[in-house]
Length: 126
Image (cartoon, rainbow, N blue to C red; front, side, top):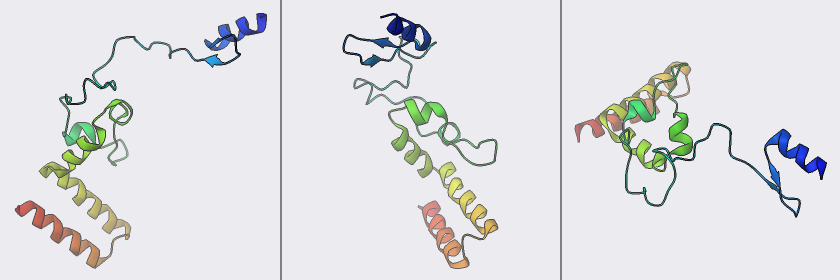
């Protein structure tokens, strides 16, 4: 019995009578939900940052775009939000960034680059 109590003190976990571990919440985690918490009630309510390319897919320290931690793990709308952000005029600039990087690295050939640029110009004219 002492070993169970010492294990609880060391790890913060509880062991029930059947010997299974129950994990306690992370330290510092509050009981109140934040605006990104997953809940069935809030599926139709979108956060203020929805579809904003600078918020949901900002340029990182290494000059590559990254999805922020709060979007990646806590937001219910992350996929639709990122898709909508990439469909905006600012989002099309991301595709142009990819073309420039691919051309410099030599991973995109002439015809593929030409085809993608043509496709982007068609989307811009719509």
